[in-house]
Image (spheres, rainbow, N blue to C red):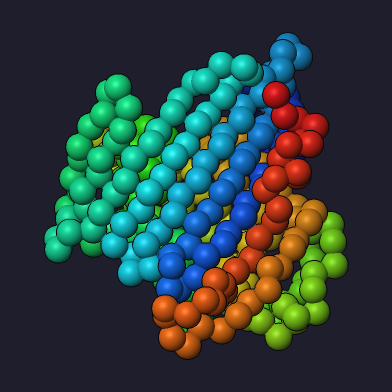
Length: 268
């Protein structure tokens, strides 16, 4: 990740970092994600700050429940920590936040979890949908935020392996997989600001039908980050026909989360 641009007065001279994402699981047992996002930012006076987000979440195979845990460090200080579960009810989502200041929350309506939303975007893109709006809950930040995700899907790429900003040759197995330019704006529905809303952030990327995202751009309003894919490890994929067998993976792509994160030069 690197700085792509910033607005005047943002006090951001430079940003560099790395994002690592690992997905594992199956349609029988559910899917789990581990991620880490380490960023070094430099202000106009040359002062540097390292922000280290560590997160994990898992979704039940029937999308009924989400378990999540997040930690955010600024330098060596733990700035934010969130741990809890969310469970779909008939017409609402119930959230239990753990910790000394534990809370119970409820959100009304049809609400998606992160991987459930990813699947819906891929399914929508494959069926020719170009605009989708969904309510989304992922437990991030303080765990009290409900987001509206507005997704715009561009025309299917004629060449799925168009490298764009990426710094590696993608596996030839992905040459036959459809891919689309996708833009998702995330609006905080818990924010009671009136009038025209602006997104908390906007994600643009190339999304492949197997779930791989690349050529990433993150727009936070006052500054933008550009991400280039530098390593991709595809785990073995085993088709699942009947749950209850020993099959562990159905559709799974990942970047190794262990050594890559541990040896990250931007680490604390």
